[in-house]
Length: 318
Image (cartoon, rainbow, N blue to C red; front, side):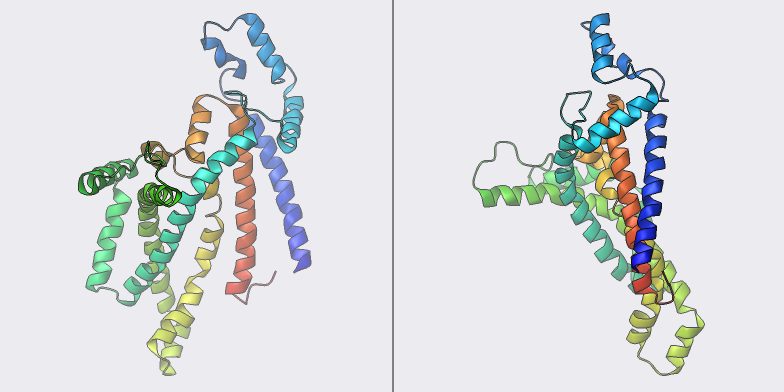
């Protein structure tokens, strides 16, 4: 176990090193130089451009920029080109805004997908299965931005409450009231982000359960006279869970990715929206840092998946 952890950490550290190199150089392959961002402003003189390039080390060779960039990143001195704020401080602030949406959306997705998918597989061809299939394909087909606007119109016209932003503007009526207001504003985007995930994941669960239910050991379990619930939930479900162990590990990078569309429509100052704005403004320090953190989260997710495989399937040996 210990040797596996050490070997895996070394492999992932090497992988992360090459990812950092590739992502840094790919970003700098974009057309135009970073120093051409701000000269669109007529107030930028050649002297200011020269000062800008020197301040952010753009006058140095690319390999030196790489070393300086990650030195400043790990020391906390890396600053945004857009507003001069520390990059890690900006990311942490937006991360705390996106975290509640991510947690609620993920919990809704994983807690509702499995009961729907399992029940559809067990009751294949029933009214429940046909209804779940219809709504799954419906939510998969509807564009997220369109469904978001429909949901906003429905909620506002029905309940006459605001849903845009993180809180109601001008509300200063006690901590409990403000907490409930924050929860309300978070609920609609979370439900919206979960609908597509529930539709897709429930289909995977159903197909995986149907595949496992046809295996020989399931027929053998029934032949021994085991109760149907034990056959479904103890023997079939455990083996059907194997593909979802990998999917669960890859959910973690969603902490960084978030949902740009949802955060933009609901004016939610999250990390996905910040990444989109950083790309548009060519704020390279923020873009590269987010890419690096995403790579770290992916590697952590795959490491957790490897450990979970051993727990779910005793046949797997590290």
